[in-house]
Image (cartoon, rainbow, N blue to C red; front, side, top):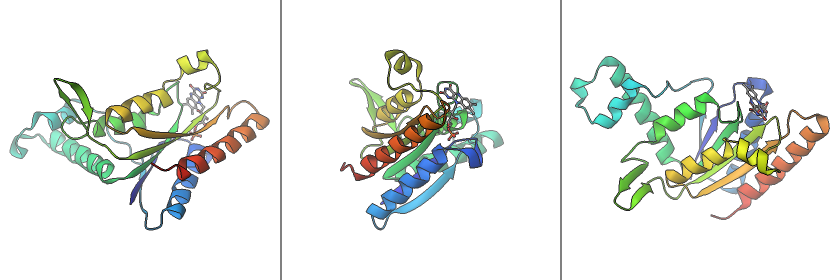
Length: 207
Ligand SMILES: Cc1cc2nc3c(=O)[nH]c(=O)nc-3n(C[C@H](O)[C@H](O)[C@H](O)COP(=O)(O)O)c2cc1C
């Protein structure tokens, strides 16, 4: 079994989501002997924004017709896409920044969301092609959003990730949540304890 461990926090040694993803990956590997872990640090190695050169990936241009920028972009897309496709389990560190995910994580999603590879459209509508994977999201946020209608309406982090992974065919998205991290020591302690419980549940759940 292959596990892809992804971090996207820009807070380096002060990051909470990095602590959570490390614990999730370690517990998963403990409970599933033989797990091979690949690591991707999106803050250390940011994918380029999905731009005009990146769109050539969808144009099926012959290799010889690609510009240097298009060739480099295609290689980046291919590498990230294949890495995602070969994973059975993906652990994603996803802090909330400005009500949504970090730009580095969005750039990665833009690379792996590729028609013909991870989704396709037919007369019946969209179909996700990355089926059979488990995604575990380590969600961290300074405020609390899960406990009120207003909070749930304001957050575009967990809800976005569930939508986009679902669109790509991943129906099993598990959330490990530490929220209220900026609301004082007691709230932070409670958040980390809740996340530890979520981690146990997420790792123990049978697909
Ligand atoms: C640039 C930036 C933007 C943030 N925006 C929000 C936000 O919109 N809502 C919120 O509740 N917390 C926000 N926070 C707080 C983070 O969600 C919190 O610090 C969390 O622990 C980040 O996870 P990390 O420690 O793994 O980076 C923000 C933090 C940063 C650095």
